Image (cartoon, rainbow, N blue to C red; front, side, top):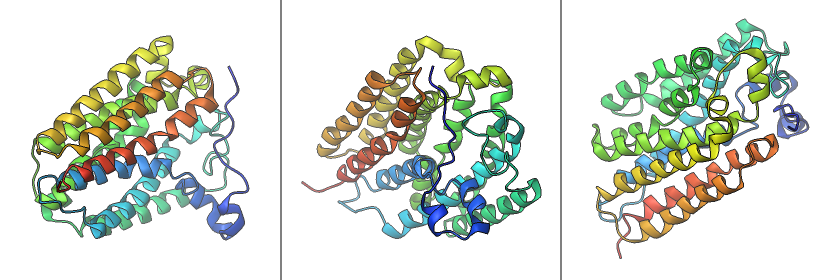
Length: 306
């Protein structure tokens, strides 16, 4: 198996443009690696678009989409900060993570804790722009956010905890518009959980050898050589539930054509993934942004007048 490189990129925009004192914090928040923000944001945008299906061709509210984009950016950063605080000893022992700012000493534990509080406060400022039901729903996700960094210590299913956490926006986007929940966003949320189980299992295969050595768990270790079959199940259920979620809102026909392209992208992932090639796993993992954007376009077109 090929060695996993460090996930701290060198000579990117942070090194070129950011003040030296800010660089460790920007890296801690993963601002140089936006894929995590996309994966947190896209279920929010799906849900906002889904809330418009059957609403006479209304496009998603760009102001609301922008608000969720800011929220996803800061909450992803907060999640990464918490994760790196909890995992700092593990990270120092793993080739891919040993240069992360807390693990290598660029940021102290106290500095990281203050940075975490600042990010959470910004997230709260974003959240209170929504209705009361959405605010309560958003706050209720914090338990999952706090649980995730510890999940790999006691279960082979930390990817499930991540899925429950990362797809909360599938509920929140709908709630921000309707002030309540119903079956379509719930189905979309469950679909997102299965999607995350697929893509984060692929991601976890980068670290499986190190995970065995340091004693943490993942679905990559649980599934091993049977991973491809599990991906078929996870992605298949995700696609089915997405279709059901949108179909309950009586979409127009272009949705099905465009959503089929998204489904084909997941098939491509299953065919192309090589669980023993960390670089290929990372490429396939990052391609889930493209799946999410295609699906977003499909849901937007679901409410277009013909």
